[in-house]
Image (cartoon, rainbow, N blue to C red):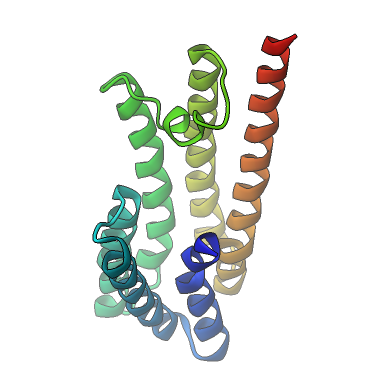
Length: 178
């Protein structure tokens, strides 16, 4: 259920875009994200760093979109989020010696640190790819194509990459057990 709740602002953005326009959808995304973060904070008395980054970027790029009435800003938010996630994975691993992928999944799987490092770098590459792909779709294709890509394409790619990562880690773990 928690995973579904993460997508509520995105679903609201999509529904409002389809019924009104990109600016109303951006305002709805901003409001829904604020409400979502308030609910998370009231329930857990804290927000994860990922939530804070997302909130700040939604409000920043959404605010610019609304103020200037220019959808380019909300389109850049997707690339900024992906870029920050990629940089965060790199800095945490090589600056602070903490592999965030291992921290998230290490309780379920036991593989050598070199495997965790490969998975970490794969996610850096994935986030970088998604950010670059977003720039292409956002600024070379119609707005409606970008909205569909943002809502369904990136979600689908992320689910596929998550699944691929899990299979890779599982196979590495199985090879160690033999």
